[in-house]
Length: 448
Figure 1 (tube, rainbow, N blue to C red):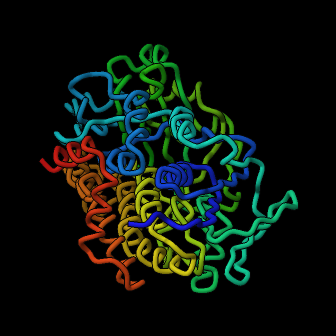
Figure 2: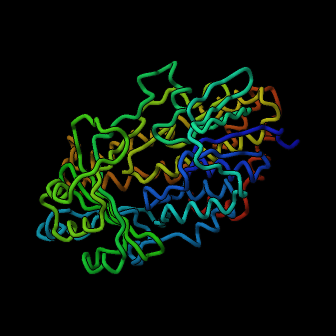
């Protein structure tokens, strides 16, 4: 098959999705430039967890990416929690011991829990991107299509003209306005997730002093309308923690975190075990609002497409948001590598939208549902921990065991059908070439 044409591709946003897409494009010989508004890479979010689908996506983007992640990842500490995504516990004093509760194991034999500090993950990803590809301090002021080009104007006065623009500029990204502003203006702004969080990182030795046996492995301590998730990062040197607080009031404070006091945090978490409250000594006194995009009618318009949080920002309750951005990167890098002329971008984006949008939006909505369940607000499940654990143990398989390689094949077939090009047999061959033998083995193992 002939190599891809010389598309001029720009990506707004150097987050997980944008960098993943750039790695995939560079691997496939497609030139790309990333424009990032911040002065440097952001470590906000701290810990990022990857399920089997995310690891397969990493393989399909670039097998070297998977190898480096394997060296930097952090697993649960104790062997009995190797295949556990989290252990469900009560947040009340004693963690449920008075009720006779000992463990709420959630996982699967084929699942091996791993996570990484966002900073470490970004360093790995940047190692595959040539110097100068990412341009910092480039905040977009406007994006518009002019003729057969996409023109991006930045706040520093620079203007660039490209064949196609991919918006990975986050939950409040400017490219979302361009893509869906005309068809669904009411859906451009993110929806408040009825929850704010407190977050922090604690050295593992300090965490073990406080939590003892419960430190070092992923845990979710649950209560009515609140909770806290903890998990190891930095190869076991640190523990990440996130306190969840449900909030039915409208959020009118913008999208940035709001200062608070430690006393306010403690008041929010009344009834929690005193050991959990000690973690707040390592939290910045900030309320972080959660937002998501439960409805997005399209992921593209003209020569602009959106990926990651800009397309399908999700609540964190299934630990699936970053993985969905990587799945976007797999499909879109594969399709853009097939485009020989800018006139075929529309066909590529239609295939991308058809493959990715139904699945990604389902992840958004089921993640919100999981948050309702884990904060004991589901009308049928309530605070029944046995039923919560049973639900959690069945709700993640469709995410983890998804056939991403099959998505690549379908996307390619749809693309060629739209442009009247090659046959399905040829598309099957190209998709298979993108997989290494190691990737094949991992996929077979996943299905076993």
